[in-house]
Every structure is written in structure tokens, then in C-alpha cells.
Image (cartoon, rainbow, N blue to C red; front, side):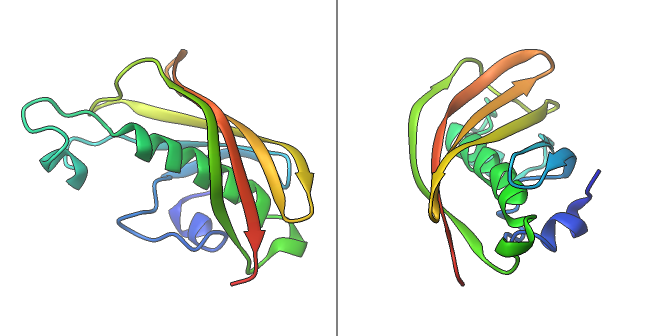
Length: 142
């Protein structure tokens, strides 16, 4: 398991935009499984939405991308690089994510051509699928 400080040693994201609390499992270059605790005091809930807090779908997608980035940047040949979001296809949100939830994020790498690749991403609360899609990414020098 990786904690936040270990995640920060791999990907360049920092608060308030580091959206992973821990990585539970990972095979570098292949997949990662991470979690995000959806705490009631997250700043995003001040505006999304007052009196009806929902963790934004675009942040769920970003958390899935960061999960994939951990797997990619854990490969020795990618150390010090950055993963850029290049696209998202077939994204679906199935159920709102709310304070108190633990968002489990699973991103599995698929085909790659040079620095460009795709990953299959799924987010769950418990055993319920809440978000899924195909992410396109680019691994680039900083």
C-alpha cells in the first residue's frame, strides 16, 4: 500500500488537486487500485452543491486518471515524467458520490503507441459501479 507521501513521490499532483488518499495495489505499467475518502469537509462541497453535496463527476474522472498515472510513472523508464490527460470516451456516471463514501478507483492500461495510450477506468463505492470510461493519456517529459 502507498500513502499520500509515497504517491507524491510518483506523481506531481499536490493539494488541493491530489485526489488519491492511498494506493491499495499496483503493477507498474499495468494497473493500479486506489482510494479517495469523500470527507464532508472537502472544499468542493462549498459550491457543489450547498445543501446537496455531490462529489463532481469530472473529479472522479481526474482521480481515475491519477490512479493510472501512478501505475505508468512507477515504471523506471517513466520516472520524472508527467502523464497528461488526452481524452475520455464512453464515460458514464451511474450513481452520485456523496460525503462519507470511499471511492475505489481502478485503472488498467491497455494499448499504447509510443507515449500515447489508453486505459480502462472504473470507480466504485462498495461493490456499486459509480463511474466508468476509457481514458487516453500521453506520457511526456516535464
